[in-house]
Image (cartoon, rainbow, N blue to C red):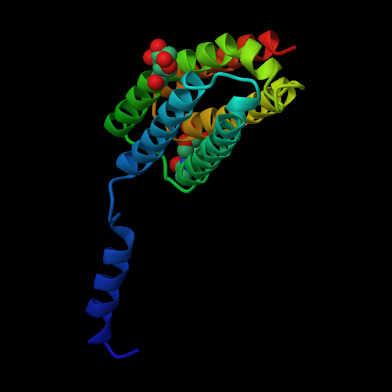
Length: 181
Ligand SMILES: *[C@@H]1O[C@H](CO)[C@@H](O)[C@H](O)[C@H]1NC(C)=O
Ligand SMILES: *[C@@H]1O[C@H](CO)[C@@H](O)[C@H](O)[C@H]1NC(C)=O
């Protein structure tokens, strides 16, 4: 190799190693996308009146649930592709999850409150509750995977505390699933 190429090579390597976007903001953006999609789903659930007339809204709820699962999957792959966070970055990411928790709770409460409507949601004659239950189970599993991935990149003390939050989130999903048994 010609010697004059070395500085050029070094510069190239350095610029590749420098993150273009801050690692914590990448993960936080993925969490924000989940929160936004959750709010959209929640609003659609609120507007749901069940029965034959609610069929369009029931379909919309299904689409919004699929989008929520996509947002969760995106966040999992983003987190898995992110290098271990510094302590400051970990604090930022942990805060985003703490902020997400009440949104999960109120969306799940709303879905549970609408069970009577979902029970007659299939064209006004059958129950859609099995679909809702399937969605909830899927979202619970994905939220669990995301929680694990996040714990894997957090610095202490966040890495030790985050599993407690993950357990609470899993518990909230379990409570909602129990209502749909
Ligand atoms: C979900 O909807 C309920 C009922 O409209 C509302 O009280 C709650 O704040 C909403 N939650 C979110 C995360 O939008
Ligand atoms: C990242 O942190 C985890 C523990 O939180 C550790 O097991 C792993 O070795 C770390 N990875 C790197 C590349 O430092």
